[in-house]
Length: 430
Image (cartoon, rainbow, N blue to C red; front, side, top):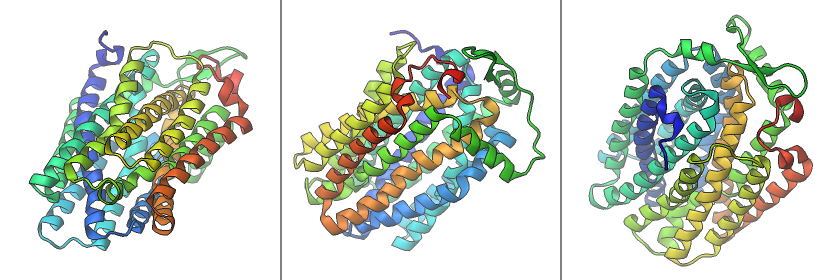
């Protein structure tokens, strides 16, 4: 193994370290939140409620957040959103420790958190291509995925221990502290607006050409709605980007039943918080495995085929998760879910960023956010209702079946995706 090329960029390395620490805290809080819901209520429908309050801000604010990410300093936007997320985590810990937490108060705090996340996602995702050379972008996203999933292993695993020995409130407080890592990294890397301007590009030229030329800085005087419309038109005219967004949405919508894990852990597997913590970390273990493999790859071909197959296999692994009544088989199923989810996520992120000019990245990521965040959060609503009406196994298995069907339908309706190799010029695939 060699040092990944993206780590040669000091700003990216700083961002990566801060991101890893912050994700560990965020994942600790997320799975503590699900456990908290099961503590407050034994009805799976509460998952639908938390999914709804996480979904609505994404739908209502993502497009505006994308325009903001293209108009304003992305680094400063990320700093502000990280501060807001840290304050919400602090309030979750305080209200829990004071014994005043109710279901509605929990929903209210998560709503505020989701508003901050809606603005944080486009700003930070659009920031990454400005931190590394274009040829290292796939490597950077692979490393970012590794950081997310290593944090996704550490956070849930520590979460189970924290809940068992310290109490729920400490999971929230530790997360509040972890946001300081990203804030410190963003401040330390300094002003990168000049870097953004140097690396802004468009793919243009004669058919078959992939000439990279600078784009002039965009003015901010145009109306917000015009900017939003321009972003939507860009997606509509980019069949590869559009198809991976569709796969993203339906794959995560149908297979988001892993949010029912605290109910599975308590009511089917009959395990405690420590085992629950490891089950929560299992999906991230799988994604780290595939992320480490991809971080050593300099070129990945047949990307469209790999995305399509990985989404289908993600659905099959979800079916295995739904029928399992064994702790170890459930853990294996969740690891497989992580492997295939990680493979498709890394490729999707790379495809979207390489086919999008810098001046459009914030808006592209805001529309993408509706799909990759809206899908699982709306899926939480569906899985909670299905589990309440038909039971936990049916809710999970039916979601896996739906995921496989969605992959087949998208490939059939948008054949350009299956044939996408990864090295074509934009003119050859649009």
